[in-house]
Length: 203
Image: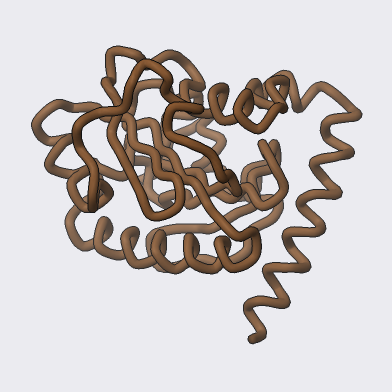
C-alpha cells in the first residue's frame, strides 16, 4: 500500500537516490541527509507506521536484514548505532530505521536515563507496539534499549545523535536540504559510502 505525498512511498523521489540493495519488503538506502558518513536507512516498501507494526513475516525479514546491514556497516566503520521512532518523534510517517556510525555512551543520547528494557529489544518491538501503540528504540554496538516515549519530540533521536556527533546542524534534515555547503559535504560522504559498500559486497 502506498500513500500520496509520502517521500518514502515515492520510489522516484529523493529518498531513493542512492539505493544500495533491496529485499521483497525493504530497501536499504544512503540517507541523503546523513548525520555522518555511513548513515543508512532501511525503509519498508509498504506504507506502515513503524517496524513494530509490520506483519510477522515482514518483521522477521526486517530482523534478518537489520542484522546483516548492521554487521556489514560495523565492518566498514568499526561500530554502528541504530534508532527508530516508533510513531513518536517521526518527521516522515513511514517505517524506517536509521543506522549510523557512532561510538559513544547511551547517556550521550538520552541523559534523562534509558528505559529498563535491554537485551534483544528489536525482537520485542511488535509486542511493545501492540501493547502501547508507540516506542522509541536505539542501539549502540551490541547493546539496545527502549526509551520513555513521553520524552519524544520531532526528530528526537536524529537531533540527539547529531549533537553527540558534534554536528547539531545536521539534525534538521529539512534545513540541510536548503544549505548548499551541507549538501556538498553530504554528496561526498554518500559517494565514499557507495564505494566502500560496493567493495564490501564483492568480498
